[in-house]
Amino acid sequence: MALGIENNYRRIRHEIDETARYCRRDPDRIRLIAVSKRKSAELIQQALDGGARDFGENYIQEAVSKIDLIGKDTACWHFIGHLQSNKARFAVQYFDYIHTVDSLKLAREINKQAAKRDKVQKILIQINIGNEASKSGAGAEQAVELVNAVSQLDQIAVKGLMCMPPFFPDPENARTYFKQLNRLKEQVESSGIGNIDLTHLSMGMSNDFKVAIEEGSTMVRVGTSIFGERD
Ligand SMILES: *Cc1c(COP(=O)(O)O)cnc(C)c1O
Image (cartoon, rainbow, N blue to C red; front, side, top):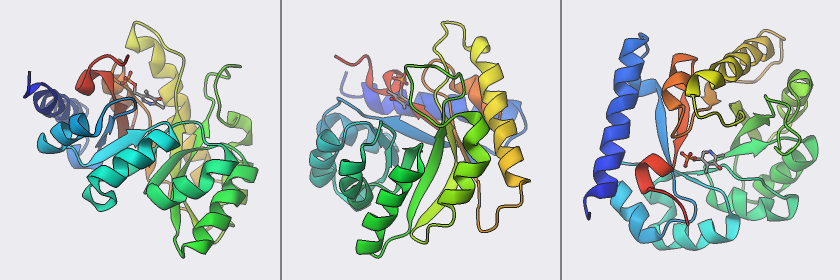
């Protein structure tokens, strides 16, 4: 069992590489973010031993104590949970990427905190692609306007779009949402906003990362298939 997480990580990485080759994409352009929410620093260490260098966390307090243990510079840390403005300070202090920016208000707070640390914070704009009442994210119809406004902030670099489509047992059903996010990225890119570099599409989880890669994902966020079920 000691090798479980290391092996899981390597297996998922291999599946990503195979999927990329199958759809004629460069595997090196697809980052595997190991989602370690509710998993201990010890288990994160096992993933590191398996080669993981990107980790995703959802809860600020929990993440901060684990990152202090493991070391901020040991890995690239991605914040993928819902972020409240009053926690933006910690997100900026601890995370290399914040994937879940969905309002100008939150972006302004991140910008303010980043200015204090003399940091340019990399962020992604989260889009509620399925228009689900229960999910955060900006509406797709607001994307161009929001990216435009956020990209004016000096201490923020907009790096891409993120989504979390509705869950389907059959990942094929998620394909249409991944396609929509990719199309939205193209739309934003061709809208003439200066000073943005939308490299990333953060989409795909344990159940549907292969479909997401086929539709252009550059960051897949995989938890359960690496660390096992969460309590
Ligand atoms: C928990 C979580 C994941 C990982 O989900 P799994 O199904 O366990 O792979 C990915 N993205 C976000 C935003 C999450 O909250």
